[in-house]
Image 1: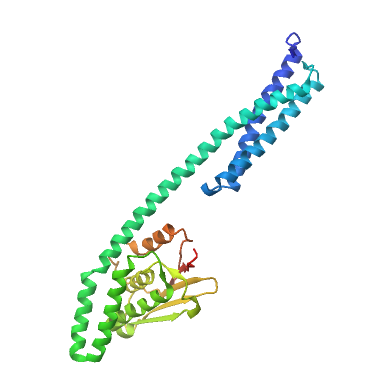
Image 2: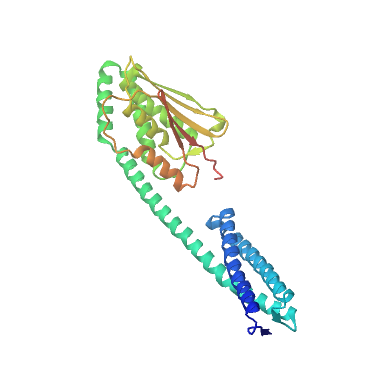
Length: 316
């Protein structure tokens, strides 16, 4: 193979084609790598992404090489005695370049995904730790227990039968609280049974100022949710809203046909800001994230506050 360096025009054309070839090699490769990353963006799709990236990248480079050598030969810019042999050598060099360049791109992308995943896991673990710590505090919340015992004390004299019912509900609540931390999920049936006991305690305290309506079909009982999810939402509703006989707070728990549990309450915010650490909803979000489930959604209008919780199947 001989370069026609003695002909300046041929030299210019040859140099231009070489620069164009290198530019196309880089730009086409970069475009293809980014396209594949868009199609297969996750860590779990790394194998498919690598195969598709290198396969398409190699095909593109070989096509560009074929076009480059065709132009070189057609315009007689090189004196080549064996064009097929030259193409094979160029193809081998191109394949090596693809492996090196593609590996750099893929390693950079994979490392970015891995770093992001590690950061997300750290953040989720921290949120879950805070959630569990807060839930542990709620298990032995002296303020809640003190109020409950005061109500029980007054009921013993005024209404002994109601006092026994109240005591049963209080026992059910604390029994559930003590065992929930041993599991990540609980059956919807158990959670609904628990929230009924919890509601009765609140109802005894607030009377006609509080109403809770549950409309969930029994056939959805096999679905699961993180324990105490409903308790956190009901507690938040009571904590942040006016609960009075002349301004009753209504809480609705219902399920739709898309395996979503909706918890809503009438919006009648207290005139003064309620002291709160704001962990209720964040705890629920963190639990769903740790379980790899779709995040709950929150909607607020002038009249109602709604949280929609995806129900989880046991298979998931």
